[in-house]
Length: 235
Ligand code: UDP
Image (cartoon, rainbow, N blue to C red):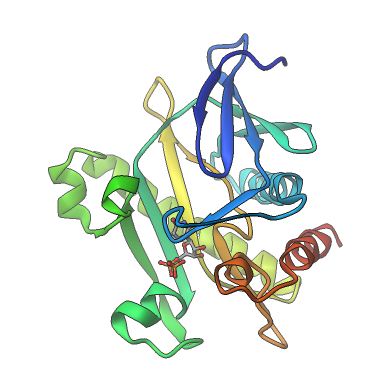
């Protein structure tokens, strides 16, 4: 499948049209951003590492019956995906306290949640992706009650699948962000990516950070961490 016009360019990915109006090509970039794009850098080979990592997760989730936009890998840093309209909600699931949960609510870093915590953020750069609840979502008509019910169930199901799978790989799934989209028939699919850019992964034994926090906090060895995640998923 050949790339046609550029449809959308974001911070980490570029989406191209294809000859098939229901399919797009998603190209993953090496550019890394944090803090709403205020911090910028490049992580060598991030595009191909995140493509390979996301493909493994999407294939696993499809196997477990979760509909994703992923169709196939077409290059080291490109995947063919279903064309969906992205719902502008970032859905975050948390199993262990880190990041904004520690900063905003004072949870002790590393505290294991008795039940996973689900949060919604409004995907809007100009507003700085603010936290919101279901009433805001309905007020802004971002999703219907029926769609949100599906999205919440999918988010918790995805968490269960990923937790069990990653445990076997010696990785703690601390938290992660998901995005969903609807196709032209209104069906909901998991979209975007699942990678060390969008998840917090800690080594189960040493609690070493194996994700984008190494970039956010200038911890060094960023590429090594991304490569380590891919190697463990492939093992
Ligand atoms: N996250 C993301 N994109 C964002 C914000 C957060 O992928 O724009 C992911 C982040 O990598 C982490 C989870 O969502 O796995 C929760 O992030 P948090 O709210 O703690 O924000 P942060 O501390 O990164 O500002």
